[in-house]
Image (cartoon, rainbow, N blue to C red; front, side):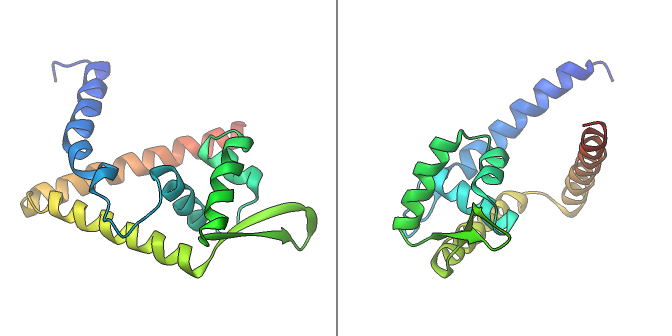
Length: 153
């Protein structure tokens, strides 16, 4: 392999943006989803974390707490999430998806998967398997790295 490791990483970054960017950008979101990209990302993260505290959600998203508060306020007014007191520590506020928020998140997820299926459909079986194997290797390597970061803390 003639390319350096750094050159390969730059080439992969370019390929990811060129391949997925034009096809998976939010402008392809169905009209029935009335949330911004940021609000949708918050919904997905709440769904992933379960019932996170505002602090946990802020940390996970890398957002300043005041910025997150504004987004969550809008989601509360839209009926997508609700705030709840933590039963073990009343100082902690948790955010949970409402039925409407869960339905919207699931609709967005289904739409994303459908777009991804359309892209992946261009691959033959061998290409699809190779992509799966490469992504699995990346996932596994990141899990090992992240576990080491948590232990080394």
